[in-house]
Image (cartoon, rainbow, N blue to C red; front, side, top):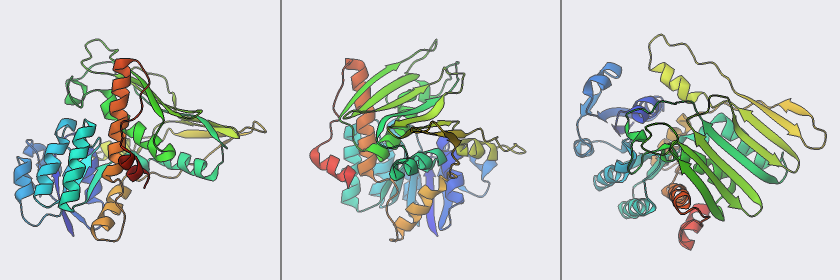
Length: 351
């Protein structure tokens, strides 16, 4: 068994990483770093709990450290783990700035350790479906791709994700998911145009985000808001052979949350999609594959045993942060910008 130390037991650590690690053959969740030992022991009574990342990384007989701390601490904790000669998983985004990811990538290369970034929504069922449609050319040449994360949360909550400062705001929370999926489908964009806003009363950081990635004549629209009560399409994809419209969000997150609550009912599946043939206008329901976030850890476990490929290498995560950061600059400067990757970094992303 590969022994795992989880740093952070907030929303990401408790909802995603702890259950997914525990459900992956070959991995053993053995220690959690958290200041809330009572909550950890309420969920996982047999686990060792330590108070600091330094203490966790110094423990003997550990193979992998998972960093599920606030965004602005990802790099510092990951560097501590690399100095201790551990492999590392970093919650998305890898860092809050491009320079920080470059620093982490240099340290990872020097340590000869594996660093993977938890871009879990590559394993959403609807993303797998749209990837298959594009690969098969079912919609022809794509002219417009639109991806939304719209929610209705009109009340500002007192949590680090919604405070001002590095790593706070909706764009840093959901933007990396939207950007990573777009880059996986279409590669690096020619230019980025974006607008961010704080729309709720009392908002300390952005809670509305709209970005357009330009690929020649193709436009990729990424949008997130917390003031949308109606159900909008999760995906809307249009090509010269047809369209695909998908409603509802992959239910894995809701199921993981429900599993943490005793006697909780299984959340209903409210997803649906429609494939429209451009020549005939015929519309038909398109079944979707079942998503599986656990595949991130399944593939990582194989990688650490020398039998697989890093599921999300730093070269790809670096490109995500570059686009996220460029969108923030575009909004502030009110102009379209190119993504500031070197030719070598762009080549490594494509490789």
